[in-house]
Length: 317
Length: 274
Image (cartoon, rainbow over all chains, first blue to last red; front, side):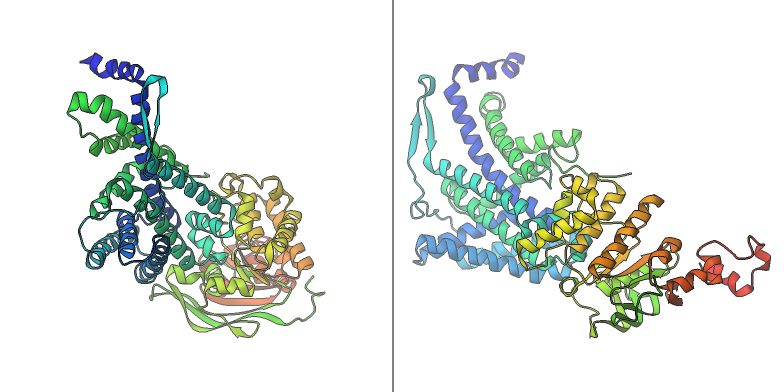
């Protein structure tokens, strides 16, 4: 039994390195999507201390809108533009209807309000686009669908081109976001607001503007995630469930850290795949991916309550 | 300095305002004051006298704390400004430096200063020039500009908060308790800088302070608040010489130390209030 746990998996890894690489690649792809969703959470949490339960449904809603618009005969790239417009409208609406009236209320009330937003978006999505599964318009968007074969060490490694595209686009998005947050006036204001609401108000930063902006960015992230995930698994309301995978990512990475969200996402993506293939399937009958991330997060929380990369609380005594 | 300060136009006028928190707690019971353009006006008084509330009523940071001005008027350059959005007031040139500094802890000192310029639309060059100006006034900030503000000392954070406000190109700075928690030497240094900003840039300051001694040395005029009311006002030099102020706020007396028994009764009452 002990050899099964401690020796055999590693022997397998060394024996078939190409297969190990394949597993890591699959993990990386899903990890990057977890990271994107977590990023949406982090951004909203940092600027408003709201834990946005609706991030998952925003992914579904964005993907549905995109596919739905295309089905109505709108060209693919125009649909992307229109979907962005819809996400902007959504951000404005959420700020007006949900956030503004609740300003200054306890965090838990705002959290409950985002659950309300979730239910509303589920209903709205079903009314407009129907509840059946749809296929992402991958080819129409010009995303390559073939695959690339490598033969490292005489083995075989298959990389799907749409996964490669997803990884590249996600990486670009993250870089753009980091540049925006660190180098621009608005980005600085978002970070400032996360640090001290009162002080941000005192220098003339408008909460309303920043909130709309942040929810819109979360909407953009949702659209990218929706396209990437939709291309792999189709567009359905079940997509929302992957948003809950972002929770352990957040616990691992810390709610406030952007790099934490990225690293946490990649770690969870890869570790859960590795565990599933080398430990889960031979020893536990498989299907460990549904719970592995949560157990991992629990263990991390035991030792580091602020997460692995949570913003260190600066306290002067 | 007060003798040399010529009579100037009134920049800010607070007329008999009343402030209520949470719809029930009456904090200011009719405060009136005037800030001359280009002057330093001190707002003095003990804990809970209403100094901070007065400043927040002017900058309208009250709103996010569930406070409201229920009576009276606040005029800036003749225009009624109460209840305006704080961002709008910053654009008009009224900015508050809050008590307890409130720097953005995870931003660097320089980023903190740059957020002060958030409302400005006059281009990178002008902001850059003002950054240099702030560094000239506070050389210490230049040394620490790459450090996260949360890791700088109390004095540096106070400088950072004042510098951040200067970055908005204000006309009127509401400075709340700049001496809080700082060593006397540092307090002196910060007041010197405030004074030179006032003289060189022509900015007006409304300064809430508990440290009456320092405040009256640097200010031109002063108001003394007690439980939500102005109880005394005048030129700073006159206030400094006033026997009541001397006794209750500066802790000195012409007759030297004397027994509490001999203090006139109204003064004794005041001591309890203070």
